[in-house]
Length: 332
Ligand SMILES: NC(=O)c1ccc[n+]([C@@H]2O[C@H](COP(=O)([O-])OP(=O)(O)OC[C@H]3O[C@@H](n4cnc5c(N)ncnc54)[C@H](OP(=O)(O)O)[C@@H]3O)[C@@H](O)[C@H]2O)c1
Image 1 (cartoon, rainbow, N blue to C red):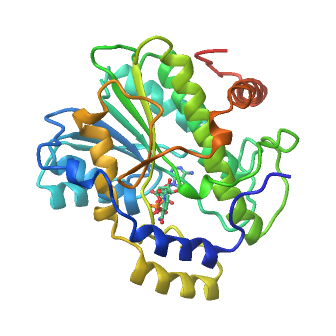
Image 2: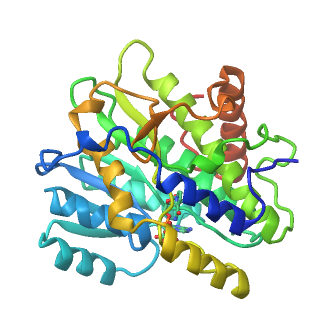
């Protein structure tokens, strides 16, 4: 059975205490010069928490921002416009637990010939128990891993993501350092629905971040054989004081709220290393890099296992074909 690093939300949150005070090696490299200068930045889950801060900070730094959200359209976009003083902010509907909305979203980007410079895959669910989606998978599996596989493959198949050494679009996965220490990927339960409660949900959250990082690593290898055509990088924003715990059981939520508000960093502060990764020249030509806030690190060694990466890709292709007659796989 797949297991993540934590199964207790309070222990997981307290680990953030240590992280918060780590030396931020590359922070000095992030300056006002790190600007988007009219580039287009797409952010999923941009209506709340880190995604909202990323949208606001990107707009302040000269980006045209596309906020892909399932809620708060248009209020969140209006708020970003107000806070950033920029009108170059748009909102699009995207519910990552509904595969047809991912198709509609990518088709719309294609029809409008939108050139994306930076794509930040930030949305994630912290569902406190199993929940079956319309297509029959568990919500945490679909939203936190599989929808990203579908979205990226569709964008590549429809040339919304273009492979070009010169323009080098940037694809950024928002992950979590809690992926470290998760078990190997369990293909017996891959994409299957079964019922579970809060401990397994916490464990699955970090486990699916390991799966996501393994996918990002395999993607980077497939696309960037001799030279970098697409920058595929991964970042953990560290502990962020957001509303990610909104569905946690009441008493646990009260304890977590206290820890979050005292120890965790504001979304604006936590957005800084992500903006750095998205905009700085320091990453030109670099792919499959992992930052934990401003600290460059290796991910869990399982993420780099070549056979695992290939197997994950194969199993993901197989599942997508089974559940979606419009599957458009970019690379088999
Ligand atoms: N907070 C932390 O301490 C922390 C630490 C490490 C990593 N992270 C990562 O940071 C990212 C942002 O998390 P956050 O802390 O900012 O949490 P958050 O405030 O809960 O934001 C999560 C975002 O994902 C969206 N989302 C959830 N399910 C979705 C779906 N089915 N379709 C489309 N969007 C969906 C949410 O939209 P709704 O508002 O509609 O639910 C929300 O916009 C996540 O990837 C998370 O794993 C967070």
